[in-house]
View 1 (cartoon, rainbow, N blue to C red):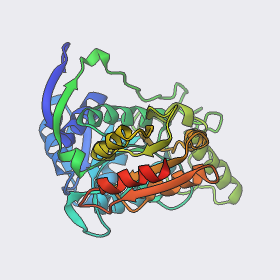
View 2: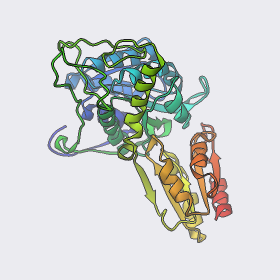
View 3: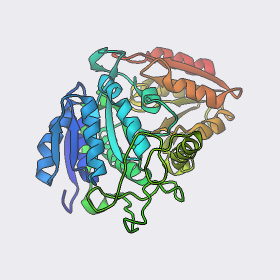
Length: 378
């Protein structure tokens, strides 16, 4: 990156990789998997050019473990995968939550369960990104709709991960990942980065998980601090604390650092929602797919609004509840069988009708069905 903007014509996977490098990522570990392999291929070429390290691990479990270790050593780190690999990563994602390790996971979603449709698309991992690991925790997940957003939101994912010391997921999909579009990389000075907040306390005074701050400052391995990193419930020193009171105190803080800052974290895009009869809720690639149905309904005189959650987790329940009181109905469109539909239904319960059009993957939502649902709700 230089002092001038750089314009490229690339696919979404490559844009994610360039976004990671722009964000300061200097370590990448992954195992090849369709349709995310292009992220790894590009990182393998680019990281050595900027002094970074690329490692192809033996599987996805090892990949996320290596990312956690690199981040703990003070390096911004990332991996990329798809559904089956994302499943394998879940236990270590929970470890990163418990140890409060900043890292980024790009999930280029494909259709499942199991091997499913390796070369075809879906929005299949939305719930897995939130609830994939066991226990109570909060996480951040973003969903880009364009190649440009793959770049921009990868940077944002790193910023949020560093700010809140939490694994952050970029939920792209096989369509966006393999879609080729214009990408503008801005001058380096225009890219806003959040750098890691390191402790200024002396080693003998430092408590790595001090509860006086929701997000405690971190220390870098090798700088003389005594660090005990564990997935066990731990006290403020990081040492195991095997009792219910300690667990309650720790988990409440881990959740609160996201829930109490959700208004700062959540990003949404709204179009024509204020005077709408019906609001369509869609995210990622889906708003682009259903655009013809929305335009056809508007020509029929129906006032259509579009609500696009950019931040999928934490989910914008309050805003959806507010909008649901103003319209005749909400229509959720997804490339799955209704993973976000259920969240929208919970937010809008007893306010208006909530309908759903979806496809489990490898195909597209039926445009005629989307149009007919809009007519019914209006």
